[in-house]
Length: 89
Image 1 (tube, rainbow, N blue to C red):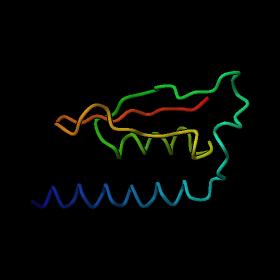
Image 2: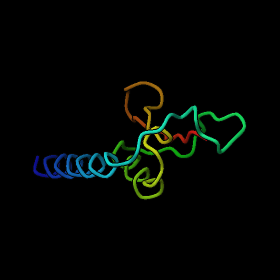
Image 3: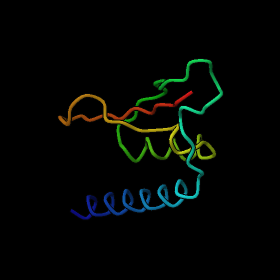
Image 4: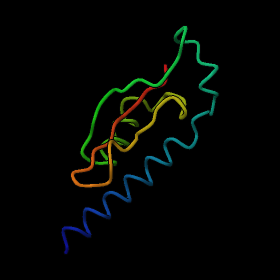
């Protein structure tokens, strides 16, 4: 039980930090992106946890506009659940 509480506390702290880091990023319309002639969402990586996906989002794409990077659930909620990182370009 102690391990579960520790893991939950770490996940919540990571969530709070990721929200604080992404909050000040300027919001721009994804449709106004000029990085490609036909911008769209592109799959990048798959992660076992939502926290790992968000961590990669911050560490590798922290300077990007918040509407150009997203983590989404793959498949259904049945275990083992995975999450994918997508980039809009």
